[in-house]
Image (cartoon, rainbow, N blue to C red; front, side, top):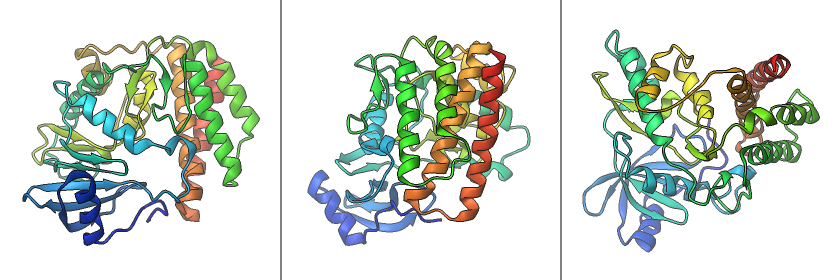
Length: 327
């Protein structure tokens, strides 16, 4: 699938974009087509270094509310996380209002390397990924606010229940705008979020949450001995670190006895797995379900993809209902 949000640039256009902001041009070697929002190109900079350049959608592109200003969010994450030991990231080489140039990571995205990894390497890699996530979560909001950091989105608040409710409400408003077939009444979703407010209120510090650590955004070495980097931080927000388990769960077990959680705890992270956390996790999955269904509109995804996204939303809505009933 090719998202309608992706900007198409020739090699000369991309070189001119970099030169105007960063003082260096480039030569495009290949377009990287795996991403689903920004355009990305493998390039050779004028000084000979290989790099990956990500380019934001054009100003006239239709985006969801939470996606406003997220290029700046990714740049912020790169700059702040670069100071953390044990969090492998590409180096931020250049950045401008609508692009960023990054060093090329060693290794391969985990989803592409999975069937080639040596037997028995998965547990150690999941443990290492847990340690990395715990270190990433030591970053906190500098202004003490929860939610998305981009001011353009207007989705932050002084407490986590208010910020999360605003994030969900923005998705419901986007669903109306794009006539998204959610399959669940918006009012029921609001009621589930409201019912979870006491559990959400237990989050007392706005920690950085990547929220997109599925295997395609995690690089591993060819021999399976190390996680070599994390990419695509633009959807990050400040909130509950437990929300990280939603995307991490797309790559394997994230339960209390899992390798990933063991690594997370080894690095100083805390997850209590009590009823309150289970209710919060169900709400975060419901939120992800809203995102993947509603984004089908502005990105122009087809009926088969929409159908699978709606099935995921239906499943996660049922989980949120069950979690609310259990509390």
